[in-house]
Structures are given as C-alpha cells and as structure tokens.
Image 1 (cartoon, rainbow, N blue to C red):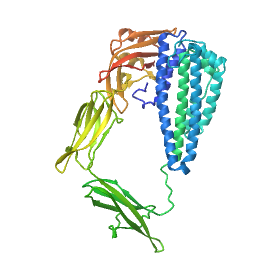
Image 2 (cartoon, rainbow, N blue to C red):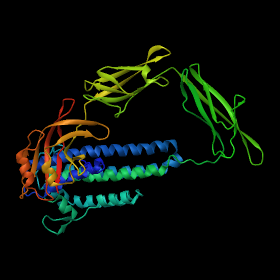
Image 3 (cartoon, one colour):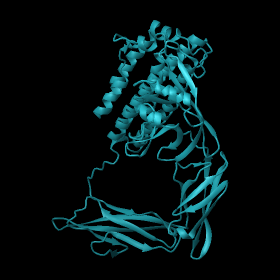
Image 4 (cartoon, helix red, strand yellow):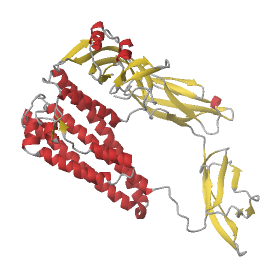
Length: 521
C-alpha cells in the first residue's frame, strides 16, 4: 500500500509497515473471524515478497563490495570483511526467526506442519507456549537488542541510525483499553493466533533486512571507489571510443595527469606535433581492423629541464552495427505499447527501419512502440539501415514477453485546487471526501509503467463496536448504497478495509489485488 498523491512514493519496506496496521487492528478483536485470519495470510504473503526484494538488494550491495575487493584488495578488503560479518549475523538472526515460525506452526498443526500452509490459523496456545512459556520470546528480544547495537554502529547518518534502533527495539506493549504496559514478549505473543504470530515474525525479519541494507550501503560508501590519489606525472590517452564504424571518425584526448593549467605540454604523435594548446587527436578511418599508435608529451619544468612522457593506445574500426534496448527494464509486456530505442551509430533515424516477430512494431517520433502478443514467447527485432544508398540488416535482438504486473488499488479524489489525486491507504482520509467518491480504481503508476486497469468488483470490511467484521459487496467499481451507509457510521480514527479486489488489465487478464486500508479522518 502506497502513500497518497501528496506524499512521495513509499519504499517497499514502508508499504510493508503500513500493512501491519491490519495485524494490530485484528489483535483488538474479541473474536478472530475467518475474514480476519485470511487478512493475516494476505499480509504474510506481501511480507514474503517484500523480504525477498530487500534480500536481493542487500545481496547486490554485498556483491559490489566483493567485486571491489577483488579489484583493489588493499583498499577494499577491510570493508568487505565487515560486510561479510554483517551478512553472517543477519542470516543467523533471520534463520533463528524462521525456526521460531516453524516451532509455532508445528505446535499447532503437528510435526508435518508447514509455515506456508497453516491449518489451525486461529490456534491461540501455540504462540504462547513457544514464545512465552518456553522462553523463546526472551531469546529473540535479547538477540534483537544485540543485533540493533551491532548494526546501528555501521550507519553514520543519525536519522537512519535512530530509525533502525527504533524498529529493532522491543518495547513494552500497552494493554487494550488500559494505560498499563506489559512486557514485549507477553504483549506480542501471548494468546496470539498462529497466523498473526508468523506475520509479526516476518515483519521483524523485514526490519532486520532493512537494517542490514543500510549498513551495507554505508560500507559501500566508505570504499569511495571514485577516490584518486595522484603521486606521479603520467600521460593518458582518453578516446571517445575504441570502436569506430568504418567511414566514421576516431577521436581521443591526450592529457597529462596533474597538469599545470598555466602551461600545456607539447604533444608529439608519429614524429609530428599537434597544434599548440591542442590536446585532441582526430582523423578519419577507412579500413576495418585494430590499429596502434604512440607518441610522447614534452613537459618543461620550473628549472628549465624537459621531460618526455611516452604514451600509446589503440583503436578498433568495425562494420556498422545497431543498438536495440527496451526502455522499460529490458522486458516487453504483452497487451501494451512498450517504448523501444533503436539506433544505428552514424546513421540518421530516417534511414533506419525495423520489424518484429510475435507482435507489431511502429515508429513514434524518435522512438518505437513494440506491442507483443504472446506471453512466454520471444520477440525478435530485426534492424536494417540504409548506408551509402544500400539497405542492409545490421542487427537483431531478442526480448522475453511477460504479462503485466499487478496494479495498485486506489480511491480517486480531487484536492483543494481541483487536481486529481489517488488515495492508496494507510493514511488519514477525510470522511467528507470519502463520501464524495464514487468507487475505486486500479493502475500501475510507478514512474516506469502507466497502465490503467478496470475494477470488476470488490468488498469493504467494516468492524462493528464488538470487533466483528461486516463485509459488503460493491456495485462493480462503484460503492454500493450499503457500503456508503456503513461509511457514514464510521467515526474519526476508525479503519475499514477494501478487499477481494478484482481488476482487468489491457492484456485481458483478471487479477486479485492486495487489500486497501482506509483510515477515516
């Protein structure tokens, strides 16, 4: 669940934290209904995906540190070793939490119980026994505190460091309808349904993985791979490219490191000096192949002595080629127009043409629009160019075709200036605005894709004063009269949920979307 249009887009971790409101609200219910238990399952599924994404991000940061260590062990090993220790401690803590999940589920479902298929979701004894009676909750609390103190020391940013310490600090929990606080273990796990305990432990894992990511990012910044130390004079050749199309121009800069701006060195290539104050070596190419050249710089020192600093380089002349790249994650999505960039170096756009299998390809200004048809099959784009009056195929490229990702549900409304905004849940929403909205919509609007979906149906779940869930069905994409009536009864600070949302995209696929939490203001 994201933020509304007045707030910057939330990260996956922040979205996950907002989902936990569902868990906290469900805990207040006197009776755990099947709808609420199903809600926990939806939250747990979302947390699994979020944790997987955060883990992949952390692994990528770790690999960057590993690669730098291989390239520059003297400078990178100290940070790589610290990152390795961070990874070990994170994996150990997450594995311990996974073991707690399994113990709780098997206490409720038997020795064959599985965390991803909980049978007795409403069991209220297993969590208390494993976490409170057997003392595993206290062990988890101690390990969280130790990990918090360890990991936060790697984060120099005080705001991020305080956020990590806050998220990993087990605090006493206020009792319902009371100002009395109970210990964290008791408040979180005593008389808690199995599915709720598993979801809470997944949330803790997410906090741990987020903290690991911040620590790894800080270690990577410490490497300062762009830092350069100058300790000697040397000559460098900086070509625009070592690959040159036949008939094109080769261009390179000849520079002296730590050069004195008050005087420029004389540059000699092949026994000939470049024009005074020039450092660019340029000539036209005519043959295909790899070629070498060399020369030297003449540097006059303050005492009048002259130093000659030699240099050499090479370049490669190639036949014409083409570049084809998808501008949306290198993936083509079925059912929509995918922007494609197609170009041939040295050839104007009006001399370039292209065709595509498994769909259609059309030019749109300087870009192309590819619309694949069959998901799972490849699209092959063939590029031709007219060079010196003759058309020739210069390149082909293959792309996988995938179905569109699931959209996000929202409630459309207009702000005080008449601009359309989208409320995506987990923030206070004015009751007056809610009552003026006709229904909900769904779209992918993540700054990468902008695809609108048609909502087919949905349900709203409102909790009465006893905590019982009251579901009401919609009128297609619109709020039904019964739903609007239930909204009018809601007081400030109450929450309700829009669930069982089904929407159809331009690819014709009907999807079940994640729930939307609405906080009435």
